[in-house]
Length: 205
Image 1 (cartoon, rainbow, N blue to C red):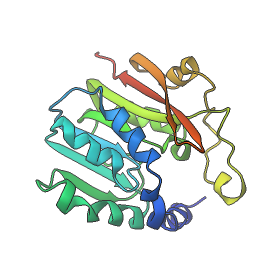
Image 2: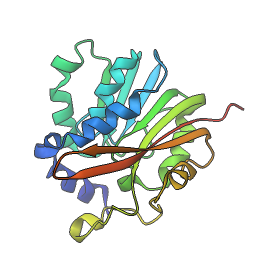
Image 3: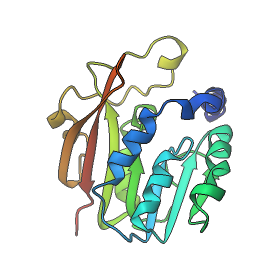
């Protein structure tokens, strides 16, 4: 499927994406344990920018947030005057894999609520862009809960096996070290939702 088709699909979801507060909760939980004052943070498939804005609490020098969907990026950037008055976030439209960043240039890579659209190919790129000892934080849906259907299913890559437990979620971060995974659950009253949060480090060579 072409990048243009993918972008058009996500453009169509951008207007109401922020209505789902679960995405913001996931992004906040991913950022919480990360070290402060990183140089460069990469937000992969930023959507409307939840993880990029959450990363600002780390006091980074710079955040680069990339998404394929122009409408998603426009909605993210529209929040900047209120949420990023210092202008630390750079917004860019384009494929998030590979990220438009030099090898071993990033201190942190974030990927919130998006891995199921990127696939396993993302991990090699994250190893490429992270500095030795750099931190990776991503969320991944549960294979017991995630059942894509209809047109939505066409956008889910076939190279990724979705984990059914924390050990399987941690095992996705092949090539990384100090990997941990935990189940993150939000009870919305009428609906309980959960994902796995995975944190890991790029190996020090």
